[in-house]
Amino acid sequence: MKNVTDSFVFLGHWPSAGSFGFNTDILATNPINLSVVLGVLIFFGKGVLSDLLDNRKQKILNTIRNSEELREGAIEQLEKAQARLRKVEMEADQFRVNGYSEIEREKLNLINSTYKTLEQLENYKNETIRFEQQRTINQVRQRVFQQALQGALEILNSCLTNELHLRTISANIGMFGAMKEITD
Image 1 (cartoon, one colour):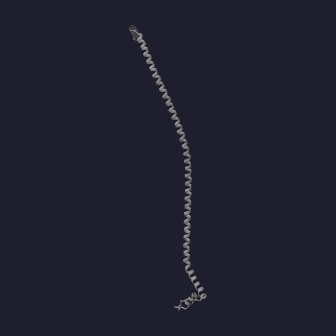
Image 2: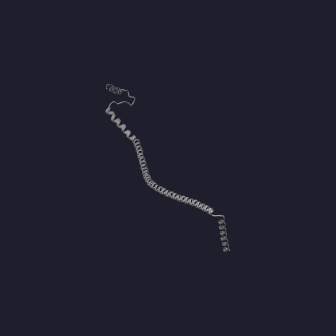
Image 3: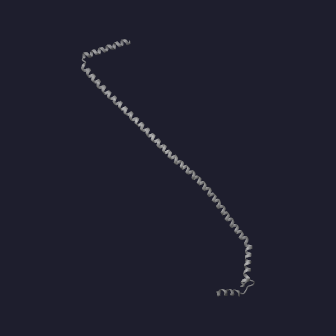
């Protein structure tokens, strides 16, 4: 502490170079110096400080205004996005409902189509069976007729003699001749 006070005392003994020097009388110099410095600062710095504060105030207001505009834009975009989301959700629900009803409709159509196809196949089967039965009946009739005809021919051939054969032919020729005269 002694060194600090010695340095102030030593500063007080400096030779003054004109009107500038250190006055070590604290009570006499500091309030006057401070009042002069503060007065000069207030007088000259008032405009600069006021300008700085006004500029800062404008920057803050502009930033607030920009923030408000951005906030309003963001709110507007959010509302639009929410509206689009609601619309898309409604469309999705509609597609879901339509999809389920479409699936049910297609299922019923497929079932009906399958029943119709089965019915047609059953009809074709029955027609085929009837056709095959008729064909088989006709074949059996033809065989029976052929066998009957062969049997009759065999009986006729075994029973007919040449004389009987000639008489039958003559009778038939006579009948044909009579028919011809009637038609002429």
